[in-house]
Each structure stands twice: as C-alpha cells, then as structure tokens.
Image 1: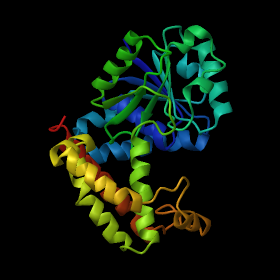
Image 2 (image 1 turned 60 degrees about the vertical axis):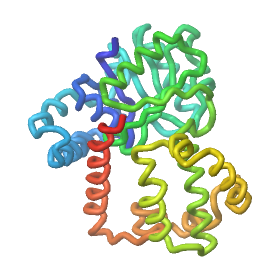
Image 3 (image 1 turned 90 degrees about the horizontal axis):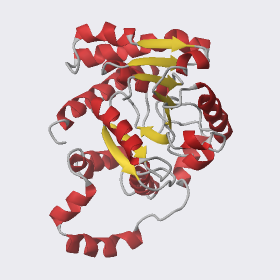
Length: 314
C-alpha cells in the first residue's frame, strides 16, 4: 500500500503534485536542487491552498496540516530512501531521466514504484539503466496542469508491470480523487495531449486563414464543443448525434481541414517574435503586466468551480 510519497522537482508540475498528495493526507518529500525554488515553494502552495479554501473546496483549517505534510529536501537520497512511491517532474531530457532512475533504483526500497510525469519521452529508454526487477515497478503517470486542480492522470500499462502493481497505483490515485486513464501503448503525447493537439491544430489554422478573430474562435470552442466536453466525452457525443451523421460530416469536412504535420506557421512566427502568451505579455491576446495576477487568479477560480461540478458527472 502506498503511504509515503516523494516528488522530484518543485516547479510548475512538481509543486502541484506534492500539494495534491498533502491535501489528501499523504506525507510527501519534495526534492528540489535549486535553493531559490526551495525557499519559495511552500509560499506558492500556501497561496493555492488559500484560494481553494476561499472557494470552499477545502476548509481553512486544512491548510496548515497540508503544508505540514510537505517536507522540502535538497538531498535526493534523504528524500527517497524510505518512500513507497516516487514521481519525477524534472526537465524533459532523456539522459537526465535515465541517470535519475538509475540512481533511484539504487537508493529506493525494492518495493518502491518509480514514476515519471512525462508525456513526451518513451518509458522504455527512460528505464534503460534500471535493473530488470525495478522495471516491473516503473511507469508513466502523466498529470495535467495545474496538477492540484485538473482531475486527469494518465497511467501507463505498457507490458512491463504486473496487473496487481498497476492496480496498487490506480487505487492510490483514486484516494486523490483523480480520474485515471489506462494507456495501453507507449505513443508520443499519450491520450489527452494528442486530442488537445488535434483541436489546437484546427484552431491555429482558422486564425491563420482569417476565418474568425481569436476571441470568436475561443468563444466558439468554449460555448460549443467544449461546453459538452466538460461533462460528455467525444465518443458519447458521437453516439448521441448518430454515427451515420458523424460519418457524413467527416467525409464533407475533414478534406477541407488542416492536416499539417508540424506546428502552424502563425504559431511559429509568434514564438520568433517573442509573443509567448501571458508570460511575455502578448500571444494571441495582450496582457497588461499589472493585471496578470488577477487574470491567473480568475483562471484558477474557474477551474476550481469546474472541478467541484465535475464530481457530479463521474
């Protein structure tokens, strides 16, 4: 049974994963090599927990106990040597992850499950330097950002792991109120990111062709397909609409839609111009620097409301 957890990396994803473990009662060791990040990560988590309390997702009294369950480490061995489950959220570099898993294999107990939050690096090469017995307890557990709010976690089941070990991890995530997806093939992007990129490809193409303004494209998505997707999957939508109708519409539309195999030229141009989105002050929309904290807060509050509502539709 998984009780003692560790998260490697306290950045965007890692701190949110650790926050989730702590919020649901698990002791978590959070390893972070950068002193500056270690010094600020608990303040960031506290602010996120306070917003959850403000929106009545947790109680104010739950904040301090959750923070107390998070132990921040600068030494890897001290962070993982007694853990049941370790997940890494380190930079997306194969060699780094290979060497990290090799070391974890050496210093973690034999029963420890080792996981990666990646969705872009295949599991097999990441496991290359681990011993054969350990490979049976290694997997991809891909969270969605922001980790403490998005309910989805994709769990790999690629043939290296016994069923009972997979089920142990699945039960652990159920205690975190996560919705788990069993991914059966090790493909780039797993499941959710592939779906998301399919939508994004057509959205960027519509903007590039001047078919509609950015605000109207987002409105069409939010109050059209995405309005249903909040509670109903694509395959359910197809069944309700009639597969014969979907087949006819597919024949008519798909040949006219974007089928490019690389990032949209408009997207690449914006990157080259330094228009990276909210972090640079401009992307498809403009963001005044002094308004960014409020914009981010509003975004988080919308996700919290949606998270609360989603529990009625499981």
